[in-house]
Image 1 (cartoon, rainbow, N blue to C red):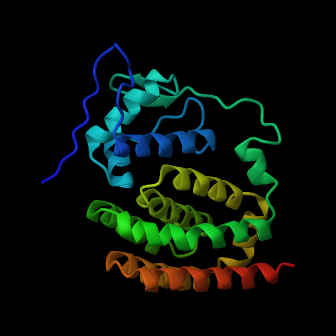
Image 2 (tube, rainbow, N blue to C red; image 1 turned 60 degrees about the horizontal axis):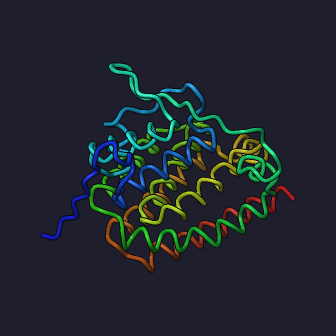
Image 3 (cartoon, rainbow, N blue to C red; image 1 turned 90 degrees about the vertical axis):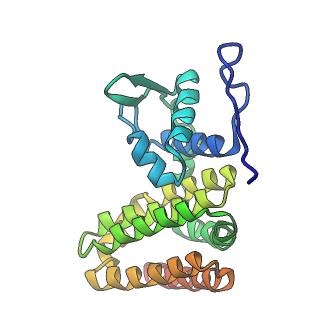
Amino acid sequence: MNTRIVTLKAPESAETTIGATVQSVIDTIVARIESQEYEVDERLPSERTLAAELGVARNTVREALDVLETRKMIRRRAGSGSFVTYQTGPQGNSSPSALASNTSPLNHLVVRGILEPEMVRLAIINMTPRQIEALGEVLSQMEQVRTDAAAFARQEEELYRQIAHGTGNPLLAACYELTIDACRQNFRAALLRRHLTPKRIGDYQQRYNTLFNAIASRDIEAAVEFIKLHLIEEQKLLLQEV
């Protein structure tokens, strides 16, 4: 078995060598902090929760948090957990959050059309069995939602986030975080209120179950075709608003 072992040497350099998996976890957490999903002084999810969510070992999460503490992005408190200390600067026009808020619904959909088919393809190639299992857990939580549009949207975001992380490409995952941020803007909230009825929530749950089955069976063609058809449906929904 070819196992890659990365050793972090002490104080000489706090970040001498960082393994690819640890770096991917770092990138994911940093993207969430910068998008203010994790706000200043907010407690991060536990190591166990993050490990299950990201499909990695708990010691991998611990190494990533060690690096983030060295970078002064978080503060560890014994017995209490890890808290965000990094604060984004004043939001100019070029900041990610400002860019997301200035993205039109149509432009947002165009970017999704570019990213999501390739994102799904790479995820099927690169996702580990543990990551696929974690994706299934998100789907299970999504299927418990019956009428709460906001709760369903949060689970939907997490489903796509897990797929993005599963590509093994931290830059792609970070780019997709920006599309999620754009999805949270006012136009999305309005669409949710009007269109995420209990019936449509049930329909979406069935669709995402189909997508999960394609990913779990490593069926690239079926999964990519599903995403393309799903985006066409999203476009039709958007055109109803124009």
